[in-house]
Length: 512
Image (tube, rainbow, N blue to C red; front, side, top):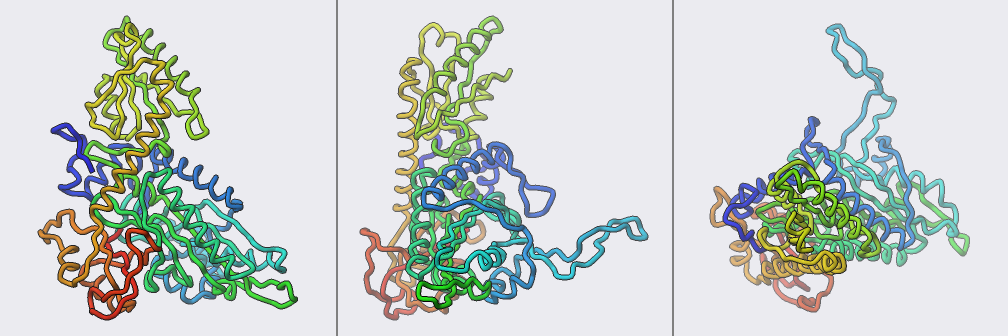
């Protein structure tokens, strides 16, 4: 990714110096979120939440366009529900938070302590298959009741030992879709359809190129028959799982009792799916597009498209400049882009223009417009795109900006995707030997690892033993078994680790 064109960057350290710390500083500088006093949890601040709201809005429209409706189910899941699906609960057991008491009392030392144990412990939902299945079992009696196509927007809790804001937190926000179908074919089609929704959303809204494919057996969602995923490469060349869609077969229907009378009068268990994406997408955006001056937001997901920064060096010109800025904002808000009015903010604070400008650079606003006393005379404004160097600007007539704002935003949206795709492809390599594979994923400086690796397309013999060996040696996993791509069609070969026969290459990477 191109670096800033200024000698000194707004974010310290730079990406190549310490990527994890750079990430934390971008979050802080963009005023997006902060750690909570509750260990492992985060406070999402208005700018960060505005990004999530736009993700919600876009995804929700796509879900509804495919026939899904929203509902809400309980936060608490009886422990007995979890125990019905052994493989599922085993997969989440170490991450579960459990409520065992229902009130607090003062003890002899005057401290509040839990009292009144619950008859049955309640698990704070790590995911909702079991509790939603209990409702579906009541709702489904006949094939005429199917399909059930429901999504919920909710928070979930998975006890996290190594939290990182947006990427891994104990509590996070997400959506989880849960559907029931009459036939296996319908459920499998649903699973793929929703993966396609995630891929389209990542490409068109987030400007994030992804690989789509199937998880290996060891990487599947607990209790699923098949897990499909989208995998993105961020700027430290690690993978991030940006969305998953699961074909659950009849496993959860059997444990929850979701049965229906078929068209020929028989009893059959429903075929179910689940699929989800979370606030991890915000972290993906930061690591995908950010630079050494802060966040860069794709316009289609930005809370503000254009910020107007009035330059007011003298008190006597302040009123006229502010009036012109507000008039320009009104004109720009009348512009519709992708079916909605532009979001425009006038920064009229009593601060220096430079300080305000840098704040919006760090927040990643797509377009910055400077307007001062000279511009009132010339009719020009200075326009800067966040995907270009911070000193780069073009001077446009006001009406030229108003008529061309949508085109500028579209150009930025497309440019962000194009350069992310170029970066990913530059660091995706076909590898055929164990030596090259290990060298690819091994840093030259183990004490302070430099950015290294990427995506390796390498043959695999299909064994869990190979996966475990590679994970233990290199912290590398199979991110997915890619669907067919023209550039990487299935080809027989030899496993990169064992030399045994392999039907096709799979995608390996270090990941978040």
